[in-house]
Image (cartoon, rainbow, N blue to C red; front, top):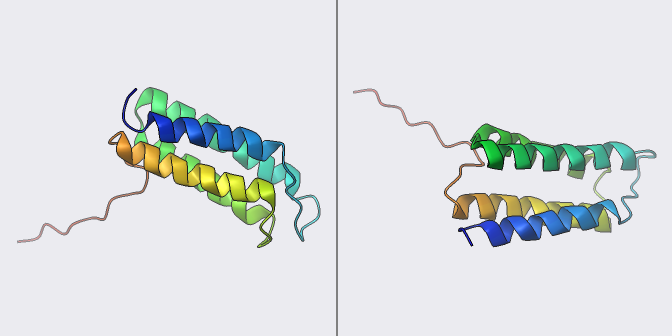
Length: 110
């Protein structure tokens, strides 16, 4: 098993489970767009891991954030699992030596 694969597998299970749980929130109709964001996050993460393009992993994390924000501040079960899956994506990618979050730019002036 490669480093980080356990975190990524746990994240995949959490994302799959989040789709089957309630996403109710104060915004009516927010469940469907939030679930679309979840599917987009999964597709971007898989593409990023398969192709080695770290920017796709960053985009996947952005899709997770959009999915979390769409339903409002209520801690619904689906949203909690999606947040946990996002944490697993970051931890698994870092353990595998991949960059999910952009690195700080260093100023290389004299």
